[in-house]
Image 1 (cartoon, rainbow, N blue to C red):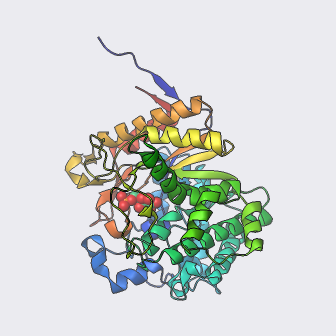
Image 2: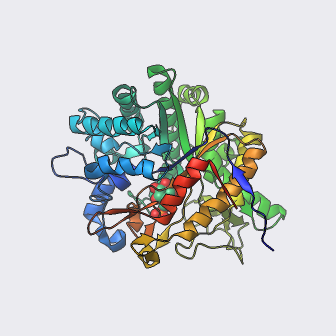
Image 3: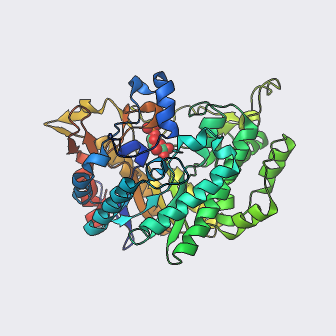
Length: 466
Ligand code: BGP
C-alpha cells in the first residue's frame, strides 16, 4: 500500500532563497582597494588556526565571478538573496574615505540582482570588522559604535536606491561568545566583562542603524538576524528548567529582547550586575535601544541547545562564563548530521515560531539561515553532479515544521538556505559544504547540485508534496 502524499503549500508570495556573506564569498584581488579585516589580520598571524591553513583571501571568488554567479540565482529558483557588504571593502580604515571600487562593485551587484527580479536583503555585518578599528579595541569601544553608525548611514545613502531591505548584524552573539569568551574568533579573549560590553555596544549599534535607516529612507525595512535556538532542558526538574531559562537569557534573549521589545530582560540584568559585569552605558543610549526596535526579524536555525543544571560546582578560580549556571547536555539517541556532527531537530523551527508569536508580538520574520554542512561531499558525485538527497530531505523536514507553524499563525515570510555556492567558513574554511551549487576549488567552476535543481522546483511550486 502506498502512503498518500501530502501537499505542503506555502502562502502566496512566500520567498525562497539563500544567504551568504561578503567575507565568505567575495575574495580579494590585487588593487581592489579592500582594507584588512579582523579575519585577514588573524590569518596573517595564526594561519594554523584555520582548517588546512586556508584563509579568507580567495573564498568563492564572487568579486571576480559575480556576473555569472547572479545568473545562477534564477537557475536555482531564488526569489530572495542575502549577500553582505564588507565594511573593510567599503571603508578600508573603518572610518574616513570610501573605496570607490567597492561602491562600483556593490552597485553593480545590486543592480544586476534587481534586474533578475530576485528580492535583495543586504546585511551590513557578518562577523567582520575593519582591522584598523579592531586594533583600537573594536566593539569594546564606543568609537566603533560611532564608526558603525556612520558606515551604516553611508550604505543607506550609497545603495538606498537599489536596496530597500537591510540587516544590521548577523548572529551578533557569535563574535561575543567566540571572540571574548571561547577563543574561537579573533581577538580570542576570555573576559566576561569585555564580552558584556561588546554585546551591549553591538546592540546599541544595531539600534543606531535602525534609526539611521528610517531617517534616510522612511519606507525601508531593517532587521537583525539572530540564531534563536531554544534551550531545551534535560528534564523537567526545577534545576534543569532553571538552567535552560538562564541559558536562553544569555544565548537568545540578550539580543532578541532589546531588538524587538526595546529592553533587556530583568533577570539577565540582575545576573550581569551580580557578577560585576555591568557595561558602560547611559540612559540616553538605553532610550535609543528602546525607541529603535527592528521592523522584522531574521532567524537562523541549525541545531538546538540542550542544557542541564551543573553536575559539578563551578570552580571559583575560573573566570566567569555563562555556564556558571548551566552545562551542555549530550542527549542520548539524538538525530545527528553524520557529515558535520551537529544535531538535527526539526521541531526547533516550530518552537521558535511559536515563541515569536506568543512572546514577541508575532513579529514578521524570515528564516534567514538553515542548512546542512557536509564534509567530503565530493564522494556523493555521480556523473558530474552532487546527488545531495540528504540535503533535500533535511530541507523538506524543516519545511514541514515551518509549514505547521505558519498554519498556526506564525508570521514567517520566507525560507533561505545557507548557502548559495559552497563558501569559505571561518575556521572550518571549506571543510563543510552547504551550497545549492558546488564549487570546485581548483578550477573555481560552479556546478548546480541535485538540491539546486530541486530548490528551483520547490520555489516554482511554492511548496512540495511528500
Ligand atoms: C552560521 C554562520 C555562517 C556559516 C554557518 C555554517 O552560524 O552565520 O556564516 O558559517 O554558520 O557554519 P560552519 O561552516 O562552521 O558549519
